[in-house]
Length: 297
Image (cartoon, rainbow, N blue to C red):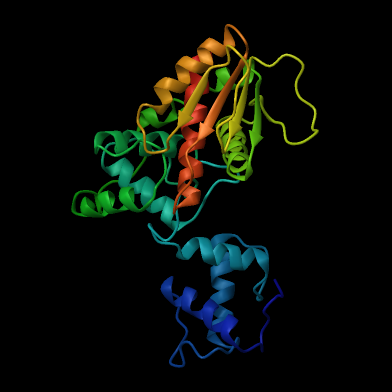
């Protein structure tokens, strides 16, 4: 982005002023006037000092990113485990709510890491929701309905939040998994599986093969992921993965176990993503990585 400096005017400055006022900074009687001067410049400098942003007195990439993170509220965006981690005020609110409700989400550090995902999945299972670790509209609505229970309560981390990641990191580091996607949605899901594995442990050995890229010599299991029905090789287990089907992980576990002990390959056929593509892709990635961890444990 082009840096915004003292003396600049326009809609971009108004956006900065709105965010600063949301955070409680004093902009004086003129308020949101689109002029970067006076109290607005002072508010930017105070924000930078409070949030540890190195930029001084102007709004560049670092200040803008910090402003956006600081002004997200829970429900503004979908949250889930990934790298780089989601971070911001909405994540902190989620952590505080989960901790206050008795689900150990770790320190309220505003970073959606492994402990936060595990706590979120435990909350979802407890509430009868699909435990996919995605803070989407259904989960946020459930948390909002319980706001009277957790709002203002002690949202500090529980001691058992330090037990480790939601998945067994050792499974991902001692097994090599090859993912071979066929189709645009399959590539999206496969990339998310790799990302999710690396968010669990940066030593994960989940390899994505696209096009002519090289493949590991002897993977523990190869997973072909397709947008459409294919004719598999004889003896290759096939699983249809439906994102809203609670039995998908169970079927996947059985297929991967069979593949790991036999042909070393499994074919996964994805359900069309429908309306919410991001959520469907993330749910499929969660189901596939969970199944891999369970089957290869």
